[in-house]
Image (cartoon, rainbow, N blue to C red; front, top):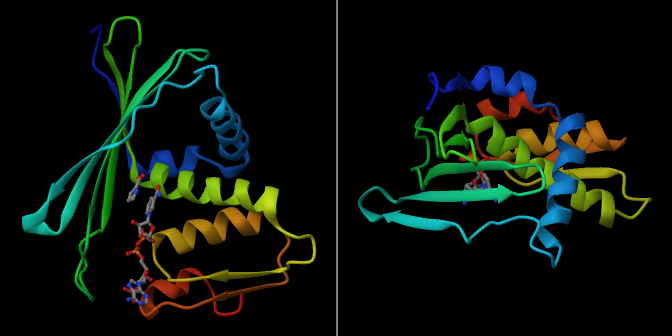
Length: 178
Ligand SMILES: NC(=O)C1=CN([C@@H]2O[C@H](COP(=O)(O)OP(=O)(O)OC[C@H]3O[C@@H](n4cnc5c(N)ncnc54)[C@H](OP(=O)(O)O)[C@@H]3O)[C@@H](O)[C@H]2O)C=CC1
Ligand SMILES: O=C([O-])C1=[NH+]CCC1
């Protein structure tokens, strides 16, 4: 490895990763993944159960030969008790040089996970949403609800957003009836 890997923290990732860039890139990557010609090499995610802590560690490597991009995500996720202040998901993305296998960058993967998941929903919504559907309903009011709210309201002109969710403090991010 020549030099140390670049470290990109959560707030920087969050700032750099914009839906208007992410959505078209992801749509292209999903097309590559679905192609029969093996344009994306992505084995099934390995899940390590952490029974003692009601959690899991997932390891998710992928390689896109066309773009010569090699990366892996490690994501931990837990069943947290109601009222717990511990995060339920945390993630790290490692970017490697595919030719040498050297580590190039370590990225905080929380915003990547939140935004990627919402962006895929937004792509599916673009393909499936009837034109007359103009009310967005969010179930839950956690991190995914917030990222889905951001992605979907940036992409579609909803007349109304409805949401449920038990955690009142979290809902301030999604204004009632906003
Ligand atoms: N496919 C993917 O890539 C990803 C999938 N996920 C999945 O998405 C889901 C949401 O994740 P995330 O937003 O990060 O989680 P959060 O913990 O941030 O939010 C979960 C929400 O669900 C609500 N909730 C939980 N249990 C109940 C219940 N029994 N009745 C009503 N509401 C309930 C919580 O309410 P309250 O606030 O009151 O606790 C909270 O609003 C999870 O299942 C997660 O595993 C997440 C990331 C990536
Ligand atoms: O793919 C992912 O990042 C996750 N899937 C379920 C929880 C987190």
